[in-house]
Image 1 (cartoon, one colour):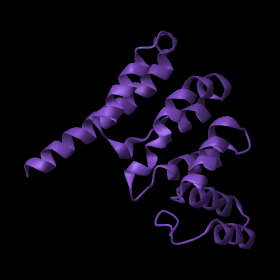
Image 2 (image 1 turned 90 degrees about the vertical axis):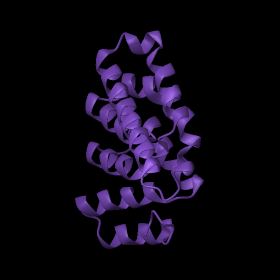
Image 3 (image 1 turned 30 degrees about the vertical axis):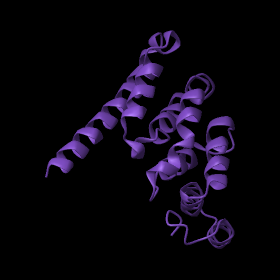
Image 4 (image 1 turned 120 degrees about the vertical axis):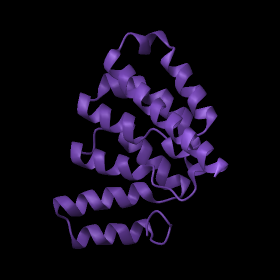
Length: 158
């Protein structure tokens, strides 16, 4: 319902009040992260990358849901923000938090050549070259985009 914009953040908050358990909290942040409007998306992106408000489990749940969209183009505003925040996330977060964020917030749903180019340009930066574990995460993200593009090409030929 959240991905399709069929529920409001107020209703999602009411549901949390009805089930404020560990699972209820995970479902709540996932639903909020999946809301399709830009204001909700931006607020969640900022909360995830710029604060330490959420636990590991909640960061994982919210960041996984962030990219669940009906229209992949709705993630376009977050491409530049993603790359602008990668190094700060890597430096400021624990390894597990950074891994969740850098994998889950990567806008894979876009799967276009522009994302490939931006990812390759980011990988070429000296600051990234000197961080093998970070580089591996971004290379895996790039490989996922390339696989998606190959699948799109095969689909077009069918």
